Length: 340
Ligand code: CUA
Image (cartoon, rainbow, N blue to C red; front, side):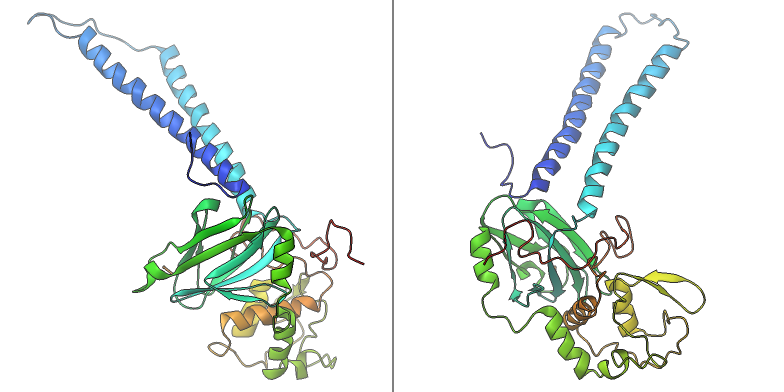
């Protein structure tokens, strides 16, 4: 007997068990309450016109029991749910990253190695995958039912989710937020591949890594002349900025994560680095979200502390961890012997 709809991620089973637990208590109390109603209705029905019930003046024991028992049950739902939520919001450090951009009415994906996809997402089985997502226009929602994975994709913001696929195959991908006339067609397929097949797919012709593409844009937009020239004084040098704390004029500090870099490109006046004047033009409306992600990938590649792209959860929100991991790890070979 099949208990659940197809389950293809580790998270999906946990989600199902927690969901079952909630439904167990819902069913339990539905039965208890309805049986109680009928039982009391029959047992204490009025038997004659002048029958008067004996008044009940309360019971401390009953009050305590029917307060404490539901409280404990509710807290068990909360504690389990919260534990799952925190796990959902905290991608493991060794997760494979993929960048997703929603745009009426398509899903674009780009892998750090450079491969791009439209309405498709290729991932290996058995490895944690972290998606960093944003939207070029309106709110979309990235939804893969077999993974029990859904998260809104919001313009002007990075959101992340992660999952570990457990079964190779091809699975439906949907947009789960009404986003205009073609919303119902905004979807595609997630291909979960055996690791060897994934490696092969990944090595198939990309126009340079995301960081390399970002480097081109960096030159093209004229950023390089100021930000990499080493002539500190006009612009902050961007070497080793990503993932580290930056002091701002005004005394505050901020961790230079993807959200901060993105804001600084689009609205340079928002958070000016201590000791600098804002002489940078705004690039609002001139750089697509996909290009922003490539620029961020490049700036990240300049830093040895850049392992943390976007804090988990909504940018800057829950699950944020300090950028603790040193140097970028070559995740292709991580945990496996290097090929000769
Ligand atoms: Cu995008 Cu609905």
